[in-house]
Image 1 (cartoon, one colour):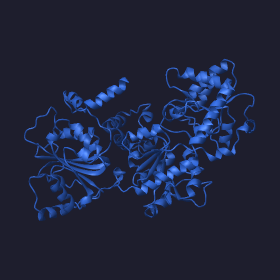
Image 2 (tube, rainbow, N blue to C red; image 1 turned 30 degrees about the vertical axis):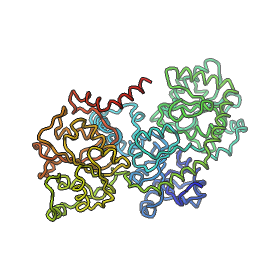
Image 3 (tube, one colour; image 1 turned 180 degrees about the vertical axis):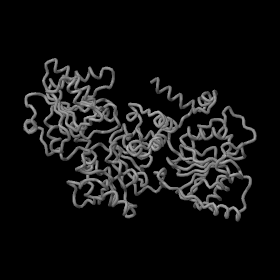
Image 4 (spheres, rainbow, N blue to C red; image 1 turned 60 degrees about the horizontal axis):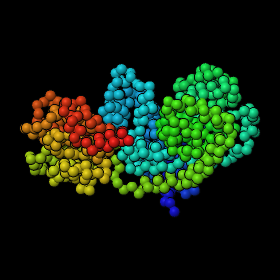
Amino acid sequence: MIDVPPQVVVFCPLPPKPNGIADYFAEQIPYFSKTTKVTVVVENTHPTPKGISANVTVLHLEEYMWQQHKYASVPHIYHVGNNPDTQYMLPVLLSKPGLVVVHDLNLHYLIDLTNLSQGDKSGYTLALQNNYGESGVVIGQQLSKFGWKGKFMPHELMMNASIISAAERILVHSKYSADKIAALGHKHVKIVPHHFSPAARHYQPKLKMQYRGELGLAGNKPVITSMGFIAKAKQIKAVLAALSDLKKQGLDFTYVLAGQCKPHEYDVYQDIADSGLSDNVIVTGFLNEDEFFKYMLASDFIVNLRYPTGGESSGTLTRAMGMGLCCVVVNIGPFGELPDDCAVKLEWDENFNYNLSNELQKLISDRHYRVQIGKNAQKWVERTHSINVTAQAYLHEAAKLQDNTSFSTSALNNRLFDYLPEQQILDWQSKNTISNDACNLWWQANLLPTNVTAVASISNNAVHHNSVLTSLLGYAHEQIHTATLNDFNVELSENLYPAAVVEGCLSDLAVAPVKWLANLNRVMAIGAKLVLSLHVPHKLTTEYSLERKNIKQLLVAAGFSVDKSVAGPLDIDMNLDDAPNSEYWVFSATKRSWMVNKNPEVYNNGASELMWLYDKKERSNQIGESNA
């Protein structure tokens, strides 16, 4: 028997919100409630939920926040989509680890809503940095200074790193999304297919003509339907162009755009007029569930094109296929995972428009062809998209949240760090014998917080480090994870740490600076605090310019932002950028991104050759893949 938690807290919109995620979860609730008490948290302005069982507790966000302690030990599930209806949950998601259901891999618009849409360009730049490192900073600066925002930027930059990093476990609907998230380093990603809607079983394909009569659709000619929001990425313009050509060839049909328009994004009425199809096209506007299913079953086939894709899995597509309808899709992303005999899959290439026209002509003319594909699709959905199995998979993953005993590193960007009072440091220093052979500047400057759950202590002098961490900063021995300078990326590879204090020498960086700093990046969580102490030798042979200002730039290239820098060992003035080199340089930095720029501008002309030597194996693999 699968383990399920006795209770869950779920952040998700509910009907009557006109949102596919709301409908999706509302259908799962009865299956959750068989074994588990369900509390749903909705936004403060959410309308009164409809069709939700009385045994389900519904809280507005404000009500949840007042009693958050009551649910502290209850597994949390967050349904995240690239739309305004899931924005309200982000502050909780980023501070309370849980199971995050990523409905849309591309979350650019969702993140945009929290900053740029409110005029916060610096917040948007920080979000870009969190996702794309130094490159993100450049993009944000270009936007702030010149107003440059590429036309395809929201499609190409998915902006999902902060949410993925904050999740303890992740659930997606496709291998495409799972692979993309796993590539970011997340270890707990599960694929659960988008379930087939139980409500669909109340509607019968044999009543097609009755539904057409109710909806005012002609019964004597093919009906083609595209369902959902009428957006540019649905490639409606391409469909209209293909149908326009078929109409000129003498074919007759009705094309239904069954969904809500987005006039600020796409003027579909202009394209309908330009295509000469005003008499053939019906635009329904928003549909309730009853109308939705009737329009679907009144159709002969469904056109569900999406390019570019944001990694989304279409609930509309699953419903249509499960009801035995032939569907036309673009063979990319999650849609490329459909069995070849269960849908018409068009390649996105130079022949796309030609192939689209041919397939539409064949589907309109050949009833047997479209019916056979629809039957194949229906059998496949029945085998693989059971809502009972889906709901159990959700609860099984939620139960694993309770079993996770490793320290939490989620949402460190959202945490307020605590530091010692300065007087406490002075008092401790006066009462303890301090070794002058070790670097003391990092703790004298009070750069390491006192309230993280674990600290990676990286040095060749673990005794001194641990003494300071325990007796001054108050960390328990079990919170300190020690490693040597030579092998820290191996010795610390089992966890991602919320803080690290590193004591090394500038010569440790001299051979491959970004590679060395990138190894620190790999063992630290997003938002983690890094204290890097570097001894500056009197003589150092290196082909890189390793001045203190350049170390800052190298840290940025390695995915960090630099909060403070201190030169010493005894001078702890916080503003010494113009001071001469001292015996120690100490940098306080924050891990912002997994992205590393391997060849930053501070490298001299010989840098690329050296990086080639150190990344020879990796680059050989890349060359092999590109030639395959």
